[in-house]
Image (cartoon, rainbow over all chains, first blue to last red; front, side, top):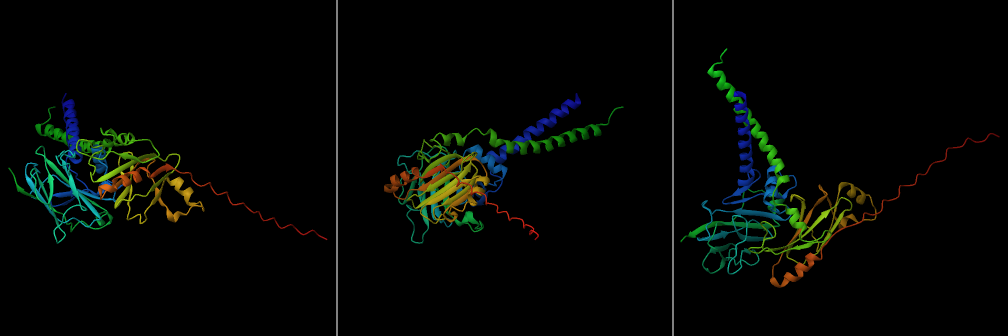
Length: 191
Length: 211
């Protein structure tokens, strides 16, 4: 009887702890190979065939088709520069510069990775269409109300996630990640 | 004989430790097995876009209708699923877009090759995707001009190729999309194996007939 109790206890620990670790690693965070810079995180491992098993598990789980190393790199964030979740009722300013790249795009998703329907149909900006300051930096405003300049309309529902994709960048071909230049997501005002 | 309470505690502790070790094994096995039990089948979705042997356009990602997860709405996509089990694959791309790229993935969506239009350094890309065996056969053929080709040894026999193309100006979109659909993604025939070199057998020196 005592033996059976012990066996049950050990099996329960093995299953619960083991599967919980897997859930935490795969579903919640990208524990391995993630590059963080400020509020942004990128995942250069995802574009490699020798990616670790966690990366493989995560990729097949989400169904996401990652950018290959020869194509570029995607940075995502679900928080502002202070670490607070992105609330579509608030106004945010995404300002600064991007890493060296031939092309970049900034896209607004919800936290499930889906594009959100807006009245104007704009879901983001690309480096070809964004209006820059004289020094070459840019500023994009996310707000439910119309704003002058580079404006993306947000719809007050759920939470937001931003993806900054840099295409054809030296970052994926050996340049180091220590001096990343990325724009900051700053909360301006909330209702 | 009754065992002491300390012994009993120690025994339970050992069982807990054993459980934790097993937890590590459960974790490793589940991470490795997860891809094979994944609920989303990207490959099935991709195969549904059209037949094998050509690039099939992926519907433009828009709010409410996203053919695949986390696509860039600034890009136009075309996908070709392939199997190089029997014949190698030839991919030819020439797209009048400011940026385009090609990426090759295994069935499970793991990337094994990618190139963009600047790295290709030419207006057109001519790529041959082969198993190591097919690759060896192509390289031993003297007929093929290998310098003009991008040769890729595939680590898998089944997978898909994805073209991403950036549309800078809306008026260019029609030309870009039709160039994507016209891109080649079809099996090609390996050159015939060169005939084995004819063995020339030196005649044995005949002993001179005695006079």
